Image (spheres, rainbow, N blue to C red):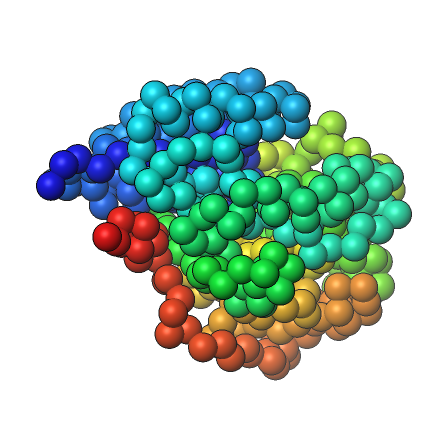
Length: 364
């Protein structure tokens, strides 16, 4: 059997949850192809961020500078690159189906704004959320029927894609919780209860729900709490709005953390807060569950499907800070009675980890 070549494209996956997807994929395929006659070429924004062996990295630092650059690479340059590389498989990890020639093509769709109705605050603080909520519906559509399969992260998204694009080759691939080796420990104030919300400060992350919930608490309770948020000054217009509008001593701004540092916080924290209104997965939910930590999450379909079978979780209306304040009060008082959550979907055709995805795309 001749050597197979797989191109994995993620030139725009620079930070946050999308970087984690790219990082986890490359980590796993580096292990998967050991002792196999498979060549992997990864198209990345910055190859210095990846040290996984058995992979050839091609760097595209210009891709993140503008959407015009990204579209140029996806729909024009990659066609020429594919002719040069002659891949057996082209696996696009970031939503769009590029103009390429390959024996088999796959796309992994995980951008959530196609299902989101942008609010005034979205347009005010991050107009891209509003633009993408309109644009992505059409970007997904370009070349989507040329793929051997379309991968999505949740069952409710699968149903929407089948209906929206009239396709029947959508497969659910749940993101795999991939732990990182982590010897670094952090020490948090032992006299406080520590809540953690890892995020990039974007308007749909709904930090104001936490802020307004904290404002409803009595001072005696507030003084027992710290909420750790992973952004700082000048990270975004929305982040600066939160910093300026809510001057709360309970908020601790950690600046952007490395993956190792995030995992250190999971180990040290008492509870994950997750009020986000928009996710197609919500990796911190999987990660907190992996650390067996309590979770207070928005009562939305993505959160319930992500969390799956788990006892130590309760949900709140993402537009109702009073509900979150009540849960925080009960958690601090150690009187909380978790709602728990059960997985309710048929998982018989689901791909449950990266190795299952690789088996699927390499299947003859």
